[in-house]
Amino acid sequence: MKGSIVRKRDEGYGFIKPAEGDKDVFFHASALVDIDFDSLNEGDMVTFEIEEGPKGPAAANIQHAADEAPAAEETPATDESEAAE
Image (cartoon, rainbow, N blue to C red; front, top):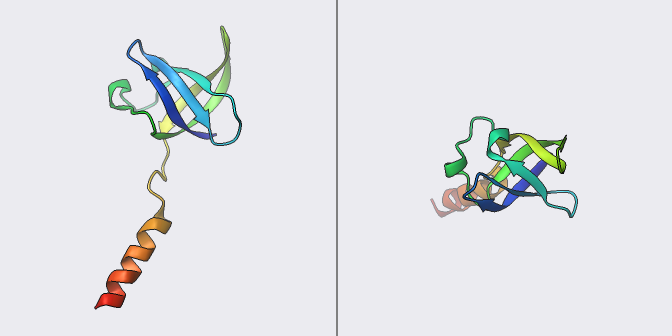
């Protein structure tokens, strides 16, 4: 599943807005994979799984999304620079 960090608290937890769905999902710093909690920012795109936590659904196995910078945005800039030559 893919989503973006919408809230991050200094206490070591936050919430992810899934790309599909309207309810934010709780996450804890311990669910991060190869990400330092302090380097995570609101708006970052991540991939995650949903597991049942002690207080309801929670994100698990959270990783930075591989395609944070869409390649489609880079292509027009390349075409324009080639056209200018």
